[in-house]
Amino acid sequence: MRGGYERWNATGRLPTELFDPDIVWINPVGDAGVARGPDAALAAMDETLESFEFIHNDPEQIRAARDLVVVVSRTTARGRGSGIDLENRAAHVWTIRDGRAVRFEVYEDVEAALRLLE
Picture 1 (cartoon, rainbow, N blue to C red):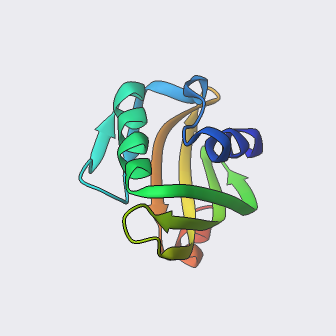
Picture 2: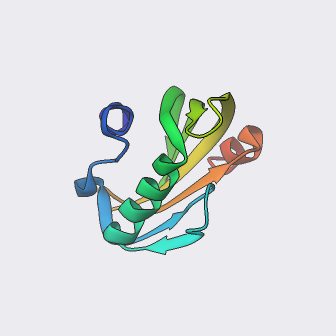
Picture 3: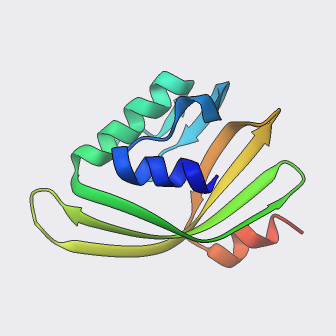
């Protein structure tokens, strides 16, 4: 997971080999909404990146239980048009099946996301 975030920060994309063909990507930014499948998930990431000069996700903790992985991430970004620097702390909740992500969703309530692991 940590390596995937390193690649995400370097390229703006996660490695598609992490995605199950049936991945559901719930995009928290932009108009993409829910994307289904690896190509749609990548398009959603690209759409998000278009709004920013950069986005950097710094995983503060990675915890797992059953089929869930919760990555508590501090995200920093700079608006492409405004130049405004943004910072947000949220949880990225991944559902994993056979070693691949079948779902990605962002929880603004970090504690609620961590309770999913109980």
